[in-house]
Length: 411
Image (cartoon, rainbow, N blue to C red; front, side):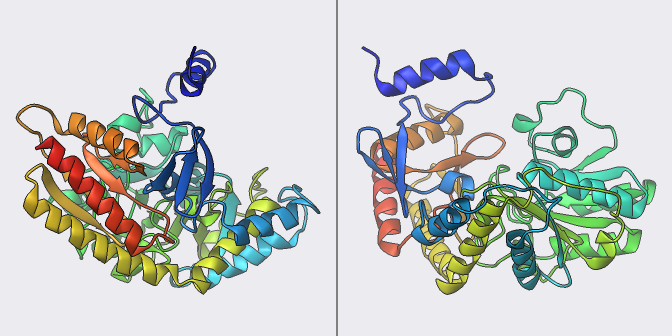
């Protein structure tokens, strides 16, 4: 008789498009979440160290957020943007208070991909140009334009990307800024789109002058700077927005994921001047959904009340230092990188296995021990840690202890 997991995989294989894959050879069936924990159909508890790819930063099934959503759901669930309602406007005002610099205008939609697509569209309206620059190993979405500016080969499925999308080396490559300036001199570029910290690229943190240099280049050549903060915004790195670490104000910021703590909501945020170029009718059927907006407001209030930014930065330092100590013990660990609770542990090949195989083995063994962690990087060899920001130092100690045990077994 098939297990529940095996039965679901059989249904998945028959009815879903094959591109939809899952982690683990023996995947658990997740049925419940509470705070930093997930539970499977057998009642086993897991410490969630990936947050549904940095979405549930305020914890699973957070009672304050759920209540706000239910209260709205009970009176009105959906109207769309062609009608006047309060939740979307309340959220827009709150975001304007939190956003960097003079970014104060929001356009709401349902996914990060849609937000990036909208930001790119806006950049062409403002500049009258159609060329864009993107970074190798970046990830910006699944639609035509968003995929065309995605530099992560694993996610760049489209065999015919737009020819107006110009790739440059990643943010840690010495030639990156040189190549950007070279293209800016040759072409009229509407925008540069980049993640402040590359997430799926392997938690790649640029050098200190990288984003200030991007800002300077954009100012010189009349190009807009789009910061894709889909993964980094809302205190993941210890700041409301990751570009704050370098005191850089982009022209457009895109957000999603943690904004709704699991409720689908996304937006791009820009200035009054830039927004003024988009006056023809524009809407998003599920943009500014009342329930998602109420959940997002409750999420941001929870972040403020519980100082999740400060907590993320401090616990991130604690976890990173623990990983650096692990690196001294285990030669398999090549590099530790990240800011706040957005950390990556890149692995080396061993004499017996590639780093990618070792990564999968570690994920499987940590799952069996009750810990769910992620993997990223072009070689899929970066263990990735982005837990809910409500995690405790005791939770992290347990993670470190079990991770060390798995590495010891690998030795």
